Length: 133
Image 1: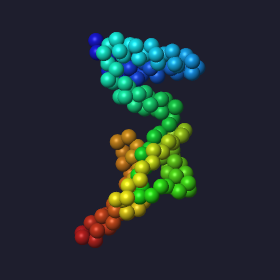
Image 2: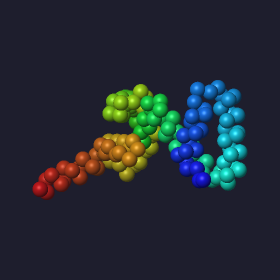
Image 3: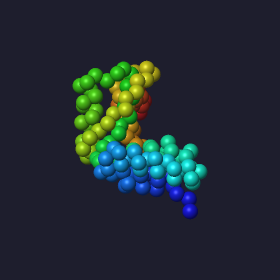
Image 4: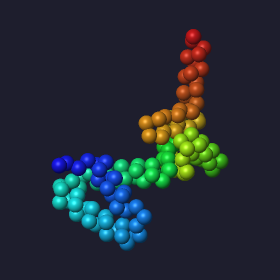
């Protein structure tokens, strides 16, 4: 029977939940041995990603990838955190920030598969399309 990345990640989450750091270290050693025994160590990065997704979901944490032309000011960073937390009903929001000089201004926020494009480029495109109609 083949075990999926999701199943590995869910199992790892369940056995590490509410454990001390020492207990978690022991679980991780054994988990690594199981992956090696099943010749599935190559899945470790995918398992870690899924584990993080499960942990965030179970703890009400939303991770948002935020792209902007320049580093966000503390004020804008806090506004984006509050926006994401409110929109997704999360207890906490974590921002993964990235700068991209090709963006004219504004921000692009990605949460999972959803994209909220507040970039100046998109706004200009919408304005142009409205004027053409």
